[in-house]
Image 1 (cartoon, rainbow, N blue to C red):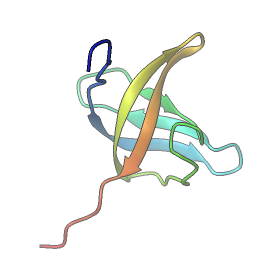
Image 2 (cartoon, rainbow, N blue to C red; image 1 turned 90 degrees about the vertical axis):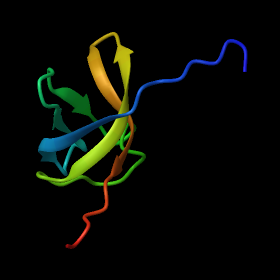
Image 3 (cartoon, rainbow, N blue to C red; image 1 turned 30 degrees about the vertical axis):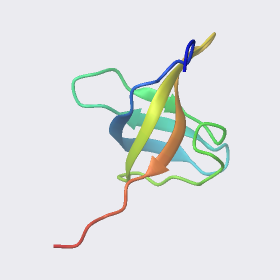
Length: 76
């Protein structure tokens, strides 16, 4: 579609997360950490150590995760 913006999908690990505020940080290998909140995680509660996929959005107060989803753990 003309004028459509496609945002790159990133994968990272939840570094910290406060269930009371719904805010935390996602660590990216070789990149700066990205902030996440309940809006960016679609209202799901995250947990430290979870692998997540997300897009990045620039807000006035910094870079945030958008549409964060938990990557299912595959048993081997």
